[in-house]
Length: 305
Image (cartoon, rainbow, N blue to C red; front, side, top):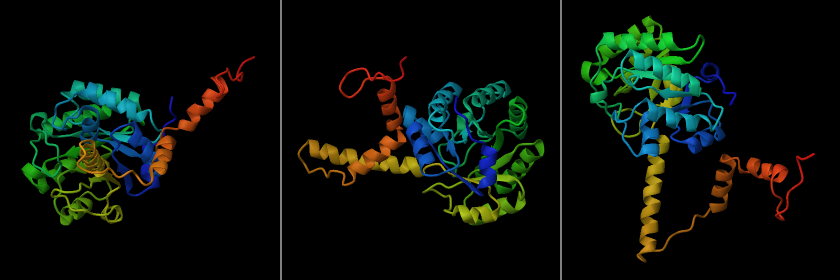
């Protein structure tokens, strides 16, 4: 079993705590290799990579659990995971919390989006549940976790449909109910971020920096000064990977049809070394040497009486 680090300790050690989104086991390994203290598993990136689906309410708890399990096993870094709306009523929320804790999730985000109105992007208007509904779900999530267990982060998408005043009021009420932190999604200006940081001063505040769309691009240092303790980058890896895959495949297809040449990667050896390191290849090769078959095809003879 992996001895996983503490998300609470990571939040205390780095302000704001910056977490890229891991969409698969390899990306989680590379995030750890790059020196990040934690990561996030968001529905959008993981669902795109694993199932080829958009994050618009098409999947359920079982799909998320399957994806999270593979990613979590790749590195002992602590992580947060998207819990959507809890995948149903309060009973489903409790089941989600219990399943996530078993997987080692250090923090769960529970949102007030309506599943039948769910949007892929946080800067677009979403339908939101009545305040009583999200209260029941957040209280159920907090009651279901183990003592001293994972953080419960309340997310509100009320900005687009009900306005910033209502969204901040919802976030304040989440905090009154006892959540560990809040994420006000869909902020559109620097002034919006400043106001959230000012009005909810002292709380653990999460921010998400999306490239493109209406979200302003603000550095982690600036967000930290505004009062945000956690910053995620939901699309930073997935956008670049998708762009690079599409471009490379187009070039390879043109090469296959004789329409153009194909440029061999200049640093292929370096790329291979990075991949081998992320895959911990040397560890598996050592096991072969110790317990398996030697290079000459004979039993190594090690590890036996």
